[in-house]
Image 1 (cartoon, rainbow, N blue to C red):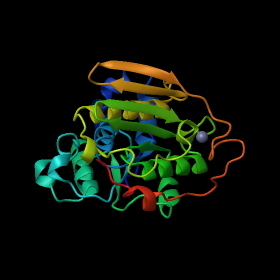
Image 2 (cartoon, protein in one colour):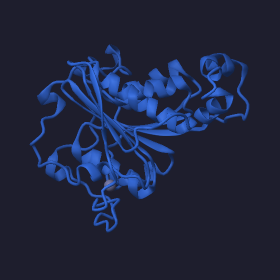
Image 3 (cartoon, rainbow, N blue to C red):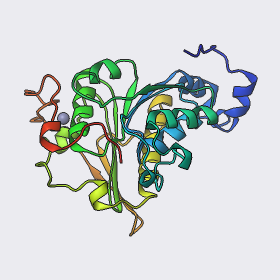
Length: 274
Ligand SMILES: [Zn+2]
C-alpha cells in the first residue's frame, strides 16, 4: 500500500508538470488522480493502452483482472506485454511495465476470471470500472456489477476495424439499455476468429482512459448517453445519442435482474481479453 501525502512531492510536481499547468487539471486535479482507484477488466487490447495512460497520468491505484497468459499473437496490440513476457501471466507483465513507467501507481493483480462470485468483492474497492473485455458473458457481468454497485462503467469494444466507446453513469442508463440480453452463443466471432486491426484497440482504449481521467478530475463532457463509433478504415468518428431504457432489465423501472448472472455456460470463456 502506497501512502499518499496531501501535497505533491518535488518529483511529482516535475513528473505531472504538463498536467498541473492545465487549468482543468492543476495541482488539485493531479491529487485527485493520485487518490483515484480504477479497476481495469482485461489486460488485453483495450486494457493495455488504457492502463498505460491511466498510469502515466498518475492514477494512484489500478486493479487489473485477467486470468490469461501472454501469447505471442497478443503482442500485435497488447502494449503492456513484451516478447520476453510470452507465457507469463498478463497481470504480472502488465504490473511490471506500469511500475517501470510510474512507481507512484499501485497495481493490484487479480489473476482470476471475473465471475458472479468475485465481481462485487473486487469492484467495491474502486471508484469506477473500465471494461476491456472481449466477450459477452464478461461484458454483461461488468455492466450488471457496475449498476448494482453504483459505479461508473467506462465501456469500449472492438470488432475488426470498428470500435465503440461510451460511459454508463449510475442512474443514467447502462449497456443493457442498449442491448438487453447477450447475443446467442457462437453468433459473434471472437478476435481470434475475426481478426483485429492492431492499432484499433489502442485508439478505443485510450478514449476509455480519457473518459476515466475526465470523470476523476471532473472536466469536460463525458460520453454518458452517447455511443462513440469509430471506423478506422474510413477514419470516421460518429456519435449516436443513447437514452436510459425504462424497460431495461437491470437499471429500468422494474428490474428483473437483481443479482449477477453468469452466462459463460452459454457462450464461451469468462474474463479473457484478446
Ligand atoms: Zn440499463
